[in-house]
Length: 406
Image (cartoon, rainbow, N blue to C red; front, side):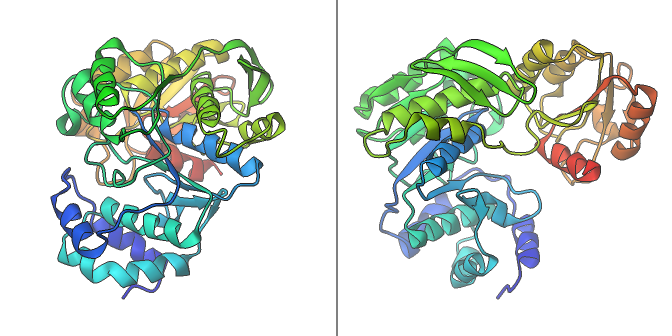
C-alpha cells in the first residue's frame, strides 16, 4: 500500500516502459473492467497541438460553467498534474484510494505506468460524474491506453513523423495509427494535414460512417502586448494570451469542436472569449522576462512552428540553448533552430533519457556543448544582455529551466 504521492511518483517512474502493446492491458480490462467506460468525452490525437487544443476546449467549457475534466501527459513533478477538473488537480487521497484498490492487479497483469495512470483517470472521471472529459492520447491512437472509450467527437490535430519505431516510418502509417481513435457514427474533426496523411484517415472515416469536419482558415492576425488577436468566422477579434503564432491553429480547432458539440454543450460568445483568454500550459512559448523565452518544442514539426513564430514575433538576435531526449531527431531540428539563431549551444539536463555530450558527437564541430545547463544559461545572459535567450528541445527541459528561473 502506498500512502503518499511522492512514493507513487517514484512507483510510476520505476514502471515506465518502452513497450508499445495492448496485450497485458486488454487482459487486465477484460478481467477487472469488462464494461465500457461511458462518461461523455472528446478524444484528441496528433503529433503536435493536441494538448493546447484540449486546454482551449477545457477553458471554454469552464467559462460556460460546465464541470470539465482534462487528462493529459506526461507529468513533471506530480502524477496529479495529469488530471485536471476545471484547471484544478484532484486530491491525493482520491487518487491513492483508487491506486491502492487496483495495485495488486496492476502488478499481476504487468501494466505500464501510462496504462495504470489512464485506467485510474477513467475510474476517477466516472466517480466524479463530470459534464465532459477531454482526453489526450499518450502516443498514436490505435492501441494507445486511452483508446477504450466511445467519445462524442474525435480530433486529429496534426500528423508528422515522430515515434517512427512505434507508429510507422511514413506519414500514411502514422496517420493510420492516429485514425484508430475514430469510432462508428462519431464525428471526426481534423486539422490542416498533409496529403499523404489524409487517405488512411478518410478510409477510416468511411468505414466508421463518421461525419468529417475540417478546420477553416483564420484571418487578420494582430500582435498584442501579451498575446494575439485573430478572426475565425463567424468570430471577430478573438484573443489568446500567447504570442505563439502556432497556437492560433489550436484555438481554431477548439472553436470548431465547440460548434460541432454546440447542441449538447451550448456556449455564448462571451464565454468563448473568456475561455480563450485563460493561460495555457507552462513551457509553451512562455516569456519568463523580455530576454528569456521557453518553448518545449521537441520534434521537427513543433520546431518548424516555433521558428515560424519567432520569425514573426522577435526582432532582436536569438541565442538558443538546446537539450533533448535520446529519441529525438536532432538531425532535422538543429539546422532549423540554427536558421534563426545567432548562436546555438547544446547542453544536457538531469534525466536518464537526456542526451549527453557523447550523444551529440556528430554536431560538436558545429555547436558548442555545455555540461551544466544552468551555468550555460547564465553565461548566455551575461554575454548577450540585450538579446533573447531561447530555451527549447524538450518539455521536461523547459519545465526544469522554468523552475530554475522562477
